[in-house]
Image 1: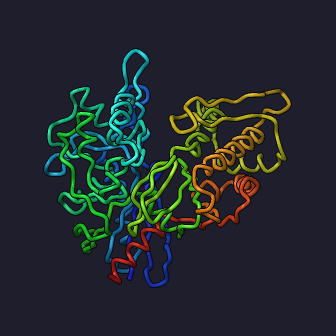
Image 2: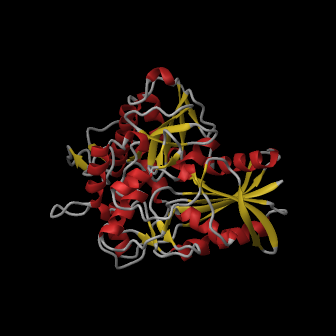
Image 3: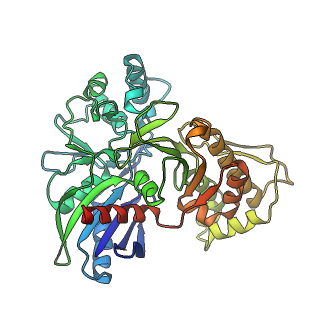
Length: 435
C-alpha cells in the first residue's frame, strides 16, 4: 500500500510517497514555506494561510501523478503559533507563526508574555502545563489578541497543519495532543480551562482533543479518494521516525533544535513536557540556537552580494568546506539571537584580524551548539539514558558539527538518516492499516 506524507515545516513544506510494504520514503519533494506578509511591524511574522494550502495542493497533485494509487494521506506540521478559525473552519486571521515576537512588547509596558508568565506562576499552573511558554505560544498569542481587542468570542485556535487538514476534508477536525503544547493539564490529559481563564482567553472555542492517530475525514485529489490522518506535531513525528527509545537522549537539530527524552509517565522537571505517541510523554528543551541563528550569520555574510545581485551558489557547501580547513579557533560565538533558554542576545567576541574568517566563525558556532546541547543534557537524569540519537537535516550537511557532538558526549551516538519526519508519518500510516 502507498500513502502520501506531507510535512508543513517552518522552512519548507515537504511531501513524499510512503511505501508501507517496504517502509520506504519515495522521491521526496519540497517547496519553500510561504514568506511572511510584508509591511508588518518589526518582530511580527504572519503568513497567508491560503498560500500554505496552495503549496500543499501543488505537492499533492505532483505526488498523485507519480505514485501508484495512494490510499492514505498523513500530515504533520509545525507546533505553536496560531490561526483563528470560525465555526465553519474559515480563517479569521493569518497564520501567526511560532517565531512571532510581538508578545514580548516593549520596556514601556507589560508584555503579554510577561502577563501570562506572572499569572501562571502565581497560580502554580506551570508544572502541569509542562512548563511550556514561548513568545509564539498559542496561549500567549491568544492573550495578546485579547489585550488588543482582536480575539473574537468563540474563535477556535488551530495550528497551520490543522487548518490545512480541515480545509482538505471540508469540516472541523479534532486536535491531536501532540499539537496542544502548553494547553493541556498533563495530570488529567484535559484542556487546562483554569489556566485559560487566568489569562482572559476563556472565550476560545477549543476543538476536540484526541490522543490516538485516527482518520479525520476524506479528501479527493486528482479524482482519487484519500483517507486523511493528522495533523501531528512535527517534532514528535521526527522522533518517531528516528525510532527514539526511552533509554535514549535525542538531539534534533534543524531550523530550531531540541534536546528531548521519551518517558512512560509525566514527571515535571527542569524541562518542558508535551504529549508524545503511544501514551508517552516527551520531556524536551526547545528553542535552542540552531539553523535559524546560523542563517542570520549567512544573511550577514551574503548581504552585500545580494544587494549587488551577484550570483550565490552552494553557500552552505562552501561554508562547510571552509570549516573543514579549521582545526580550532579562539573566536567565540554565542548564537542566542532569538528568545529561548540561552537568552536572546547573542554575540561574537574575542575577534582579531588573525582569527576572523568564514571557517572560524562557523566552527565556533558549531562548537557553541555542541556545548549548549551538553549543558542542556544535564537537566535529564543521567541514569535514564545511555545513548544519543542525532536527527535533523543540519547534522547531515555539517560533518564538523557531528564530530564536535561526539567529542562533547561520552555516550554512544546514533545518527539517523534523512527524512525522519516522513518515516514517522510512514509508521503512523502502517499502524492505521494494521489496527
